[in-house]
Amino acid sequence: MDIIEFPKAQKDVIDTNMRRAIELAEESYKKGNRFNACVLVDPNQKNKVLQEAHDNTQRQIASVSHCVICLANSFGKYCKESTKQPVKIKTSRNESTFEDAQKEETKQIDSLNTKREAEVEDIDSYFIEEGSYYYCLGLDLYVVMEPCVMCSMALVHSTLNRVFYSIPYEGAGQGGVNEKIQLNNLTGLNHRYQVFYNVLSKEAQDLYKKLSV
Image (cartoon, rainbow, N blue to C red; front, top):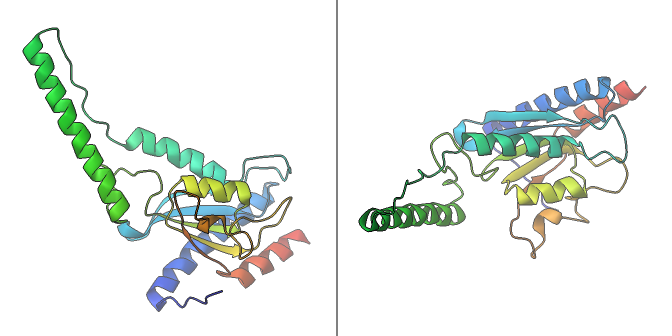
């Protein structure tokens, strides 16, 4: 286990985002859900908060409406709606027009492939178009409770960059990114992400205990 010391400016940003997640978790708990919530942040856009989500399980063990899943669904829809698609070319039966259209389509495909290759080589090149995202590539997630195994795998598929969490997973099953499990680091998966924990853990745990009384 490595202890990471962030520079003060970075630590202030991390604490600010986690405090927001803790505030949302408190609201969630008061509505009858688990004490959990998350905040999605773009570190390359001055730590702009992109979306927030709270637990919506009504404390039911069988529910899949964990805050991470709720956020993944909503941000996935946002990406689909906001990402600019390649211009479709209207073809005709005229041979020369059809050939021109094929050439243009090939050009567009090559352009998209170049962008995708750049995304793999450089984490900072995750914009498809200005203001659009390739799902969660390059983004940070702040979540109060450690993601469960289901949520941890969802984060693998989201191509997230970093996860910060405050307190260990509580509930049926177990967390998916602790020292024992580390789904975020499995070599057989097509993506890995960094995990940092114990962020404002005392603050979160003290509030949780107070609410649970």
